[in-house]
Amino acid sequence: MTLQFDKLTPNLIVNDISETVLFYTQKLGFNLKMLVPADTQKMIDVFEKGKKYKCAMICRGEAFFMFMEKSSYKSEMKNLNSSNVSMSGILYCDISEGIEEFRNDLSAKGVKIVRDIETKWYGMKEFYIEDCNGYIIGFGEKVK
Image 1: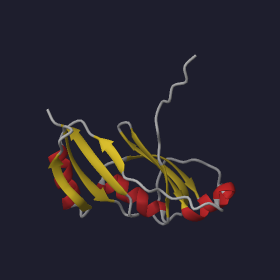
Image 2: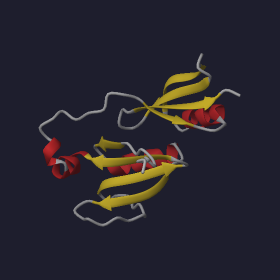
Image 3: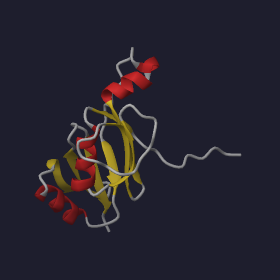
């Protein structure tokens, strides 16, 4: 039997789950998959403004992100607290088509574009944004 990986879901540490969920759903068009309210071990799928959450998962197509609130991360991942866990990289999402319209929509919604659309030598048209937590995300469409 050959081990197969089904998907990769980055789990990003954030200060505010609510702010992050609203950014990704309202500005980037992701769908909420689940939330874990603070001080519970229960998954729900309905977001309520003003409520505190410790974890969330969102998706758009096959792109998934999980977010963990910083203090919850420190509580649940005690064995990693002594190490300096951080991400040093850029997240990248392939999109099938409509990159110009997507970029324009994000700009109109006030999303910070950190590198505008360019067609690269490797056959991708791409641009990069900064999310509400300072993470950089690139979006690329294969040049046809």
